[in-house]
Image 1 (cartoon, rainbow, N blue to C red):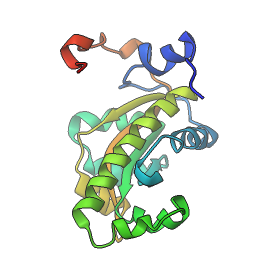
Image 2 (tube, one colour):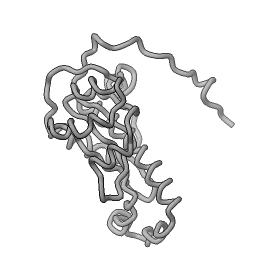
Image 3 (tube, rainbow, N blue to C red):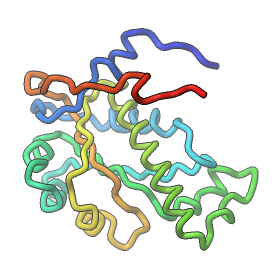
Image 4 (cartoon, one colour):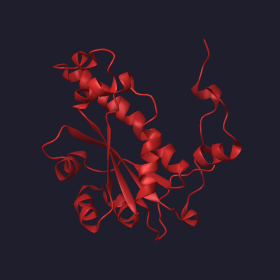
Length: 196
Protein backbone atom coordinates (compact mmCIF):
# COMPACT_ATOMS: atom_id res chain seq x y z
CA UNK A 1 0.00 0.00 0.00
CA UNK A 2 1.43 3.37 -1.04
CA UNK A 3 0.17 6.66 0.29
CA UNK A 4 1.49 10.20 0.61
CA UNK A 5 2.37 11.40 4.10
CA UNK A 6 1.11 14.81 5.19
CA UNK A 7 3.11 18.03 5.12
CA UNK A 8 3.84 17.90 8.85
CA UNK A 9 5.61 14.56 8.39
CA UNK A 10 7.51 15.79 5.34
CA UNK A 11 8.61 18.86 7.29
CA UNK A 12 9.78 16.75 10.26
CA UNK A 13 11.69 14.29 8.11
CA UNK A 14 13.10 16.55 5.41
CA UNK A 15 12.15 20.20 4.95
CA UNK A 16 12.60 21.47 8.50
CA UNK A 17 15.04 18.81 9.70
CA UNK A 18 18.62 19.99 10.15
CA UNK A 19 22.00 18.58 11.07
CA UNK A 20 22.54 19.72 14.65
CA UNK A 21 25.87 20.67 16.21
CA UNK A 22 24.85 21.82 19.67
CA UNK A 23 22.61 20.09 22.17
CA UNK A 24 20.27 20.93 25.01
CA UNK A 25 20.91 19.26 28.33
CA UNK A 26 17.99 16.87 28.04
CA UNK A 27 18.42 13.11 28.19
CA UNK A 28 17.07 10.80 25.52
CA UNK A 29 14.82 8.07 26.83
CA UNK A 30 15.87 4.57 25.79
CA UNK A 31 12.34 3.95 24.53
CA UNK A 32 12.96 6.47 21.72
CA UNK A 33 16.12 4.67 20.62
CA UNK A 34 14.19 1.42 20.55
CA UNK A 35 11.31 3.04 18.64
CA UNK A 36 13.72 4.51 16.08
CA UNK A 37 15.33 1.10 15.51
CA UNK A 38 11.94 -0.57 15.20
CA UNK A 39 11.14 1.84 12.35
CA UNK A 40 14.57 1.77 10.70
CA UNK A 41 14.70 -2.02 10.54
CA UNK A 42 11.67 -2.01 8.25
CA UNK A 43 13.55 -0.36 5.36
CA UNK A 44 14.57 -2.57 2.43
CA UNK A 45 17.99 -4.26 2.26
CA UNK A 46 19.38 -6.83 -0.17
CA UNK A 47 17.90 -10.25 0.66
CA UNK A 48 16.61 -8.74 3.91
CA UNK A 49 20.24 -8.89 5.07
CA UNK A 50 19.97 -6.19 7.77
CA UNK A 51 23.74 -5.79 8.29
CA UNK A 52 23.56 -2.57 10.32
CA UNK A 53 24.60 -2.70 13.95
CA UNK A 54 24.16 0.35 16.16
CA UNK A 55 25.96 1.03 19.41
CA UNK A 56 24.43 3.84 21.44
CA UNK A 57 27.19 5.66 23.32
CA UNK A 58 25.57 7.21 26.39
CA UNK A 59 27.56 6.60 29.58
CA UNK A 60 30.53 8.76 30.58
CA UNK A 61 32.73 5.66 30.30
CA UNK A 62 31.60 4.96 26.74
CA UNK A 63 32.01 8.63 25.78
CA UNK A 64 35.57 8.51 27.16
CA UNK A 65 36.29 5.48 24.93
CA UNK A 66 34.96 7.32 21.89
CA UNK A 67 36.62 10.68 22.48
CA UNK A 68 40.19 9.78 21.37
CA UNK A 69 38.89 8.62 17.98
CA UNK A 70 37.27 11.97 17.13
CA UNK A 71 38.89 14.72 15.11
CA UNK A 72 39.23 17.90 17.20
CA UNK A 73 36.28 19.74 15.61
CA UNK A 74 33.92 16.88 16.50
CA UNK A 75 34.90 16.45 20.15
CA UNK A 76 32.81 19.11 21.88
CA UNK A 77 29.56 18.47 20.02
CA UNK A 78 29.89 14.71 20.48
CA UNK A 79 30.72 14.91 24.17
CA UNK A 80 27.75 17.25 24.70
CA UNK A 81 25.26 15.11 22.74
CA UNK A 82 23.09 12.95 25.02
CA UNK A 83 23.62 9.97 22.69
CA UNK A 84 26.09 9.17 19.94
CA UNK A 85 25.07 6.30 17.70
CA UNK A 86 27.91 4.37 16.10
CA UNK A 87 26.34 3.23 12.86
CA UNK A 88 28.23 0.08 11.92
CA UNK A 89 27.85 -2.99 9.74
CA UNK A 90 28.40 -6.67 10.42
CA UNK A 91 30.60 -8.54 7.97
CA UNK A 92 29.07 -11.77 9.31
CA UNK A 93 25.54 -10.61 8.44
CA UNK A 94 25.04 -13.59 6.12
CA UNK A 95 25.04 -15.98 9.10
CA UNK A 96 21.56 -14.63 9.95
CA UNK A 97 20.16 -15.13 6.45
CA UNK A 98 18.65 -18.55 7.21
CA UNK A 99 16.42 -16.71 9.69
CA UNK A 100 15.95 -13.44 7.78
CA UNK A 101 15.61 -14.84 4.23
CA UNK A 102 14.41 -18.41 4.86
CA UNK A 103 12.87 -19.32 1.52
CA UNK A 104 16.23 -20.03 -0.13
CA UNK A 105 19.84 -20.71 0.85
CA UNK A 106 20.98 -17.08 0.64
CA UNK A 107 23.84 -17.72 3.07
CA UNK A 108 25.61 -19.73 0.37
CA UNK A 109 25.64 -16.66 -1.89
CA UNK A 110 28.19 -15.05 0.44
CA UNK A 111 30.30 -17.72 2.13
CA UNK A 112 33.94 -17.27 1.10
CA UNK A 113 33.22 -14.24 -1.10
CA UNK A 114 34.93 -11.47 0.86
CA UNK A 115 34.50 -8.69 -1.73
CA UNK A 116 30.77 -9.40 -2.07
CA UNK A 117 30.38 -9.57 1.72
CA UNK A 118 32.13 -6.20 2.19
CA UNK A 119 30.19 -4.49 -0.61
CA UNK A 120 26.82 -5.84 0.54
CA UNK A 121 27.41 -5.10 4.21
CA UNK A 122 28.66 -1.55 3.60
CA UNK A 123 25.99 -0.59 1.07
CA UNK A 124 23.06 -2.00 3.00
CA UNK A 125 24.42 -0.89 6.36
CA UNK A 126 24.68 2.64 4.94
CA UNK A 127 21.09 2.43 3.73
CA UNK A 128 20.02 1.35 7.19
CA UNK A 129 21.97 4.23 8.70
CA UNK A 130 19.99 6.65 6.53
CA UNK A 131 16.75 4.93 7.49
CA UNK A 132 17.79 5.31 11.13
CA UNK A 133 18.29 9.07 10.75
CA UNK A 134 14.79 9.44 9.31
CA UNK A 135 13.36 7.15 11.99
CA UNK A 136 15.05 9.16 14.76
CA UNK A 137 13.57 12.35 13.32
CA UNK A 138 10.18 10.64 13.11
CA UNK A 139 10.20 9.89 16.86
CA UNK A 140 11.14 13.48 17.73
CA UNK A 141 14.92 13.40 17.96
CA UNK A 142 17.36 15.75 16.29
CA UNK A 143 20.35 14.23 14.51
CA UNK A 144 23.93 15.21 13.84
CA UNK A 145 25.37 12.58 11.48
CA UNK A 146 29.09 12.90 10.77
CA UNK A 147 32.33 11.41 9.62
CA UNK A 148 35.48 12.92 11.07
CA UNK A 149 36.74 10.11 13.27
CA UNK A 150 39.24 7.27 13.15
CA UNK A 151 37.28 4.16 12.16
CA UNK A 152 40.08 1.86 13.21
CA UNK A 153 40.20 3.40 16.68
CA UNK A 154 36.42 3.11 17.07
CA UNK A 155 36.50 -0.50 15.90
CA UNK A 156 39.28 -1.32 18.35
CA UNK A 157 37.48 0.38 21.25
CA UNK A 158 33.98 -0.96 20.60
CA UNK A 159 34.13 -3.96 18.24
CA UNK A 160 37.43 -5.75 18.95
CA UNK A 161 37.24 -9.45 18.18
CA UNK A 162 34.06 -9.11 16.13
CA UNK A 163 33.17 -8.82 12.44
CA UNK A 164 31.53 -5.42 13.06
CA UNK A 165 33.02 -2.30 11.45
CA UNK A 166 32.08 1.34 12.03
CA UNK A 167 30.64 3.39 9.19
CA UNK A 168 29.61 6.80 10.55
CA UNK A 169 28.51 8.49 13.77
CA UNK A 170 25.21 10.19 14.51
CA UNK A 171 24.74 12.42 17.53
CA UNK A 172 21.19 12.29 18.87
CA UNK A 173 19.17 14.42 21.23
CA UNK A 174 17.39 17.74 21.28
CA UNK A 175 19.31 20.27 19.25
CA UNK A 176 19.78 23.92 20.04
CA UNK A 177 18.25 25.50 16.95
CA UNK A 178 19.71 28.92 17.79
CA UNK A 179 23.19 27.59 16.92
CA UNK A 180 22.32 26.34 13.42
CA UNK A 181 23.93 27.79 10.33
CA UNK A 182 21.82 28.85 7.36
CA UNK A 183 20.79 25.79 5.36
CA UNK A 184 23.21 24.99 2.57
CA UNK A 185 22.00 25.02 -1.01
CA UNK A 186 20.75 21.88 -2.71
CA UNK A 187 20.96 20.78 -6.32
CA UNK A 188 17.83 21.14 -8.43
CA UNK A 189 16.20 18.20 -10.15
CA UNK A 190 17.69 19.36 -13.44
CA UNK A 191 21.21 19.50 -11.97
CA UNK A 192 21.13 16.09 -10.32
CA UNK A 193 18.63 13.95 -12.20
CA UNK A 194 17.65 12.88 -15.65
CA UNK A 195 14.86 10.86 -17.16
CA UNK A 196 15.67 8.56 -20.06
